[in-house]
Structures are given as structure tokens and as C-alpha cells.
Image (cartoon, rainbow, N blue to C red):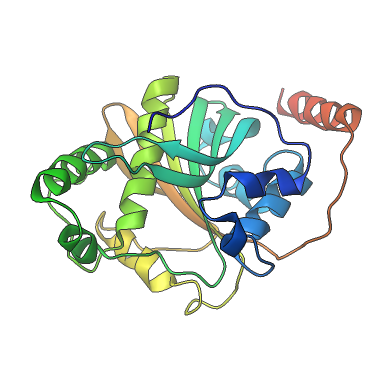
Length: 251
């Protein structure tokens, strides 16, 4: 299915529900779909924890980070089959480096779905080779990862790079936004294994450089967010004032 390029702004948290693959089962308190909707709607910009990643990156080109747009449940088409990579949030940011494209994978007591080995068994040989070849090229890996690697982390990262190419952005970022503190419940070990593919150690709340992919610098980060289901209304005037204040501070 081809991704539409016409998007309608959300009016409230509950608008996010309609974009889910299965709204009846996925829209529940304590889980990622509802948690990420409240986090981003209430922030009125970048959630504080994600903004912190860029502010403390140590790279002056990556801050200050200002949200240009965020699209819930954004689908990125991939080769080798009709099913796209459905990102919880696809965000475009403005920084001193220019545009940054960021894919966000929210987690609250859910795992990272199938391993690479499980996905291979469920996919045709042609589809597997075509899609995995595209993914590896996008994310800067030269060899096929181990079967126990979580496939979701691979295609979410590829989503960020593919959209960075489309926006002519110089930086792509894949962020895991965790809403539960337990490493076991949120499968932090799988994320650590993913970063080891790049020879990197996973550190929470830190932006970590992974690779240069055709002139696009690729980073990843894991942030801890709080569960907060209080819907805070942000008026358009207040939001514009907030954005203006950030812009003045950055000058």
C-alpha cells in the first residue's frame, strides 16, 4: 500500500487511535499506543526526554532541536512485500545541522516482535532477500545480523534513513521511547544487542552515533518517559509563543 502524502493535524490525544492497526486491542492504558499519544500531544513540541537527547548530545550541530512536524503511525514502504514499517511517530526536527528525521518506537510492556530468524521463516526467499538487502544498505550494516536480532529495530532504523533521504536531511535518528522502567518488561537487552551490531554500548538517555550512510549520519537513543494520561490543552497562541521563545533562545 502506498503511503499517502496528505496529513491532517490532530485535535486531541484520541485522534491517534484511528491510525492504529487494531484500535480495539492496542488502545489501552499502560501500553505504548496510548502512552506515546499523550506524551507527544501534551508536549506541544518535542517531549522533554527526547529534547534532552539532542541538547546533551555533545555535538553542537544537533542542538537546539525544534519540532517541525510529527506524524502518528507513519508508514514507510519497503521492498519485498506489501506490509510497510509502521512507526509510532515520524518526526522532522530543525537543528544547527539542518533537518533531522527521527523515527520513534514506543514501548510499554511490549517486546520488539519477531526475531530476524522468525521473520525469515514467515517470508518468501525472494521477499526476504529484497527487503533485508534494502534495510542493511539503509542502516549501514555490511553483514546479515544474527537470527536473534529483533527485526523491528532493523526496519524502524531503515525508516528513519529512507525518510531522511526523502527530506534531504543530513541526520537520521531511531529512538525507543520507553514508558516502563523495568529493563525486562521493555526488553532493553534486545536494544543492547542491536547497538552491538555497530560496536556500540547502549546507554539510556544518550544519543549514540551508529554509522554514516551515504552522507547521512545515523544515530539511535533510548529514552525513559513517564506514564501520564492527563490531557493538557495547549492553545494555538500558547504553542506559537512557546515555539517563538525557543527560537529566540537559540539565536
